[in-house]
Length: 159
Image (tube, rainbow, N blue to C red):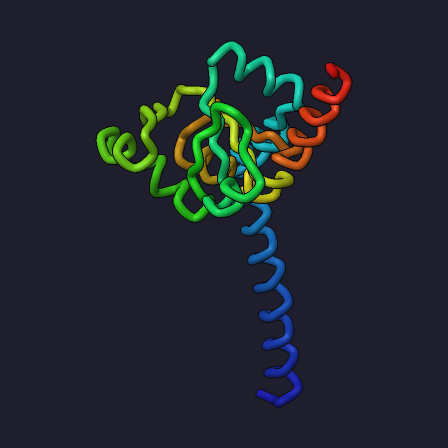
């Protein structure tokens, strides 16, 4: 065997190996498309959230850090579960969940809405919830920033 042939064979294996890995990656994404595709359509608008809260048909989970809520405020009726606790919290037994968050633990069929400051962390929380089987989860992409802006303008117009 010549050195040239060995190099060509190695290069061919490297190229085709990469192509195979890329194709496997696409198949893997296709296999998980259900989770990915369902998350794309799970945004809630300000008015939708306001109506959902009024109807008491959802659990609104604010995934900001506790200090952020204490410093800036929160959407009335929301429960604070910081993003780094969401996965563990949704898998807790009901008694532990109630003790830690002072709320009834949601079931996988309950409607959840996640919020944060501006939609980034709530999207991550949504992905976590959906991966754990909470298929009625949504997120409020506008977050606290949008909520506070609308609420302030509504109060200003009311005066």
